[in-house]
Amino acid sequence: MNKKKRISIDSTIGGNGDIWMRLVSFYAIVGIKPDLCIEIKIPLFLRNLAQYTFGDRLIILDDDSSVEFHFTCLGIRDLLKGICSNKKYIAPYHRSVIHDKRNREFKDKCNIAMFNIADFLGVIQVPDWAFIEKYQGYLDIIGIKKLRHISYEQYEKQLHLDYNHIYSKLNNTIPVSPELQIPKDFKQEVLVFPTGTSRQFIPVWWAKKYLPNAYYAFFHKDKDALEFSNNGLNVVFFYKEPGDIIALSQNAKWTVSTDSFPSHLLQFATEKCTITITEVLKSRIIAPVFKGVVINAKAVCHPCIHLERKGNPLCMGGYTECINWKNDMYSTEIINSIPK
Image (tube, rainbow, N blue to C red; front, side):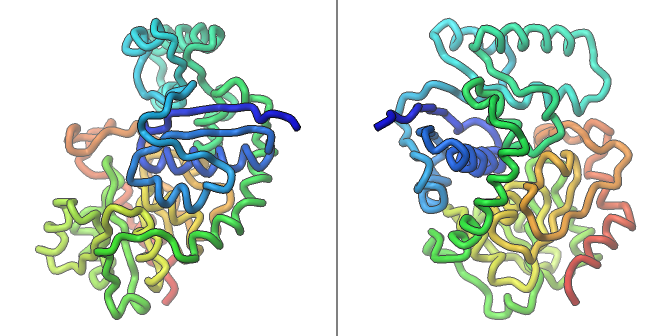
């Protein structure tokens, strides 16, 4: 009996949506190559849903497990200590950021050269430029040299083969928080996930103007919820289990989500959903299998670089909020996507 080839990864670094896209993608890779054993470490709050959804192919590790590869968003200078300790890194963001900046500076060219050398040596593995506008799930994992022989066409075909299986699981008895409460009138109402760490966040004025009767969903510790409720908008909460996001959406008439973490779960859990694109390329963050509606960005500065909203008052274009929200066509397309 052939022994399975083991790949172990620390995937605790990155946005929650990034981590979900990696899970979906590693799941597809094992579907293509069943001789692989992929072990993956993820944040604690995602483990119940990940084990439930992907546990038949992936091994979900605990915090104390040792791994071969580590996802990172740091530059080479900050990784030198780890490299000297024989750590191996996967750096999928480096090339995406440079691509989205459009105008390369001298320091960017130096960074590219250094990452190319690090990739050749196998200490920091990066994806091929050819896939920079493809679905990020593939972009994140194709940096691993052991997986580079798997083409995007193979990968996308497997995503489609897996979709019904994942969708069926996520529409069954998923793990949810005991605190979760679903309003009685939810079946007749629109649910909105307005959140996002960057400029994709839906402004309160937009919510009041275009969807004043909708329910706006927030993590129960999110202080932004108070601003919405103080402005007379309906607010509903989700808790520690990410399955709460799915359960809320499945009980609503229709869901609208910014291109933030909830949207990544919903792409595999519901078809009654509109996802709004603000800063990131649609092709990079919308799974090829998604059957809902996507509203593409209208801003001339799209795509732009992700900047954490609270630490950076202005985006790269110099705005406090994404100018997509002030575009009449963008707003009209969102409203028209919701069934009457």
